[in-house]
Amino acid sequence: MNLPLFIARRIYGSEDQQREVSRPAIRIATIGVAIGVAVMVITVSVVFGFKHSIRDKVVGFGSHIQIQNFMAQQTASPSPICISDSLQKVLRKTAGVKHIQQYAITQGILKTDDDFLGVAFKGVGSDYDLSFLKGNLVEGEVPHFSSDKSSYQLLVSNMMANKLHLKVGQRIYAYFIGQDNVRARRFTIKGIYETNMTQFDQTLCFTDLHTAVRLNEWEQDQCSGVEVLVQDFDRLNETAQTVVQKVNRKTDRYGEILTSQTIFEAYPHIFQWLSLLDINVWIILVLMVAVAGFTMISGLLIIILERTQMIGILKALGMRNTTVRHTFLWFAVFIIGRGLLWGNIIGIGITLLQQQTGIIHLDPASYYVDTAPMELNIPVILLLNAATLLICLFVLIAPSYLVSHIHPARSMRYE
Image (cartoon, rainbow, N blue to C red; front, side, top):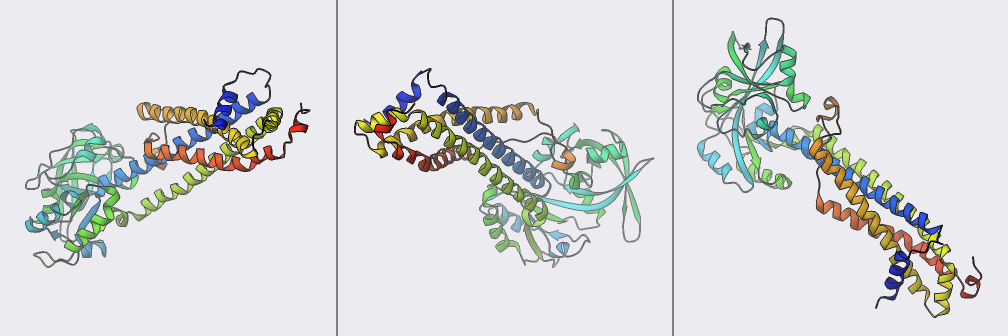
């Protein structure tokens, strides 16, 4: 039988009403641990949810890997490429690649009777993954985009719609400036999307791939680039290296040089900003563990001092200092365990409540989301609980040596 565990369980479960000092100390220590764990769970959930939410929005606009003309990354002028059927088959069979889709970008001006706005028209075809656009649709519907014909249907952002006072079903003229002329096309607003990503919402609308290619005066088999979606984001760099080997420095049928870049390379400022959140998380975790540790130290010292007579009796009966210390460390485990339980209930409860109701709102102009995104990561939460328990026990080792200075004879007279 584990004697320290047995004694600690009896002490923890006792209903001795005369212990007027230790009971508040135990409650305070439990509350301190619970608050610390709850804050850590909420913090980690918010950071995971926020980072993944922003990442998914950026990927929704630019995919995981982009294959472009080498000159397109060096100059602002549009430079087309031609992706042959054989290269498309190679990309689809590449390990880690989930889907590939072509796109074409052209610049134009949307004009109403009262205002105008310069935007980028992103032409996409029937092979384009529309799940992201459908998930962020606020009005109307996503058009049926085509690679071989023009329907002149347009999907615009809510920011554009508010600026130009556009509505679903409305027809609007767009003007495209070429080298020698200005061409006008009349589009129908089919749907309105909103992602709260300002740099995309204020400039990007979607139309047919065939329309964008014709407006750029390219050949039918040319496009601005190919977007590659990977199966596992955590292995993006590994998949990107494979794509580099099969694509980079290759030339298409028109002699254009192909190159590729990941979403990290295309939008480094966004991902560098997201990486800074990790520093804030570590600061909060350290502070919360420190709070839990200090409350446990103060609680354990109070309990040891209040149990001085009991410690003296145990020593008089022949119990070693090590055994007595282990008894109070087991007692601390019970306190920490209850604090962890309530902390997880509070933290996970608030996270689930936010996921279901979105009760906590944010300014989308500053945070790119209108509600605080939260994502439960069970392995990380379990790791936080284990780390909190071990760290708190570690910091309690030194205070537990106080029992070594308690002498049986003196403790009998201690009140």
